[in-house]
Image (cartoon, rainbow, N blue to C red; front, side, top):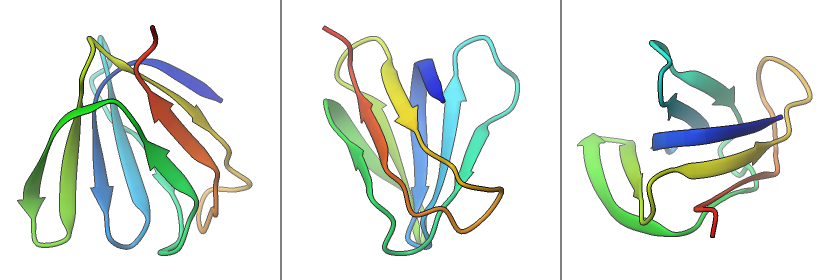
Length: 85
């Protein structure tokens, strides 16, 4: 699956990624494992939200995220997010 127009990404130390997509009211959630294979590039800034949660903001207008999910939970990736040229 590919998500375009991702405004920010919430990441947890347990491997859960939540994607805020422009025009959507709810997050898209990828439920991974702690050592999952995920990469976020082209980050303008990262902020702590809670003890084990970070939010990533894109260097461009939006992220594009290519996501592999084998099921509802315990996915191991890969997930690749970047800003389109």
